[in-house]
Image (tube, rainbow, N blue to C red; front, side, top):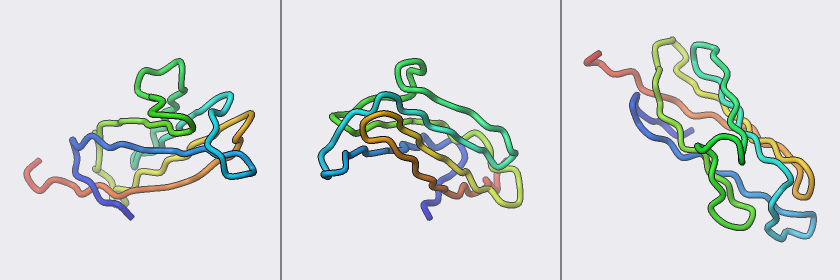
Length: 101
């Protein structure tokens, strides 16, 4: 599991392929984030500037790590695509709490 610090800018990357393994652009791409506090945020490609298409089938979400105040300090995320290349993937990363704050 990747480990980051509070105030890091983290890049989440998703790659989409069709059943033959060729890169494709899905009809829609959505990133869902669950912060350690339980706060949930959804970012949608084409609606939210934070979601960018890097190249055919490759999408990025850059998010600022703004909390690590709970015991778990685990950020969970999920990316969901519809249409061609439809699918979903779950992942998580840990954030170290600053000893200075």
